[in-house]
Length: 94
Image (cartoon, rainbow, N blue to C red; front, side):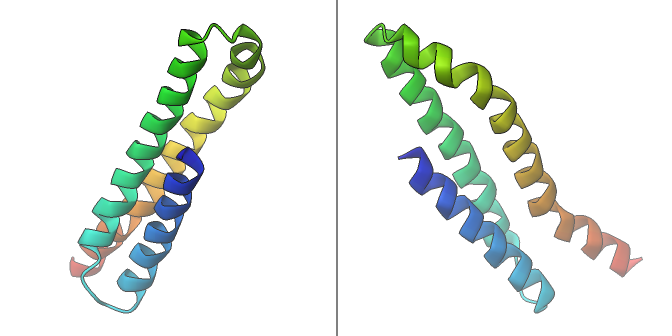
């Protein structure tokens, strides 16, 4: 599920950038992209919660330490890319 939500977040981000570049209102696409990023993180957290509930310590030891920095990085990049049009728009208006 988290892969699907992540893919939707990437598509929404691309739509956000395309709409900004074409001069259209990009705020809905920006909100959707950031929202789907948050949903992706929630889905990943649910997956980890299932592993804890089923006491699958091997899965936790294999995945969690390597995925934690990746999830932080992807989230920060997503936020940065999605709010870039806001800052560019403000700079252009000055």
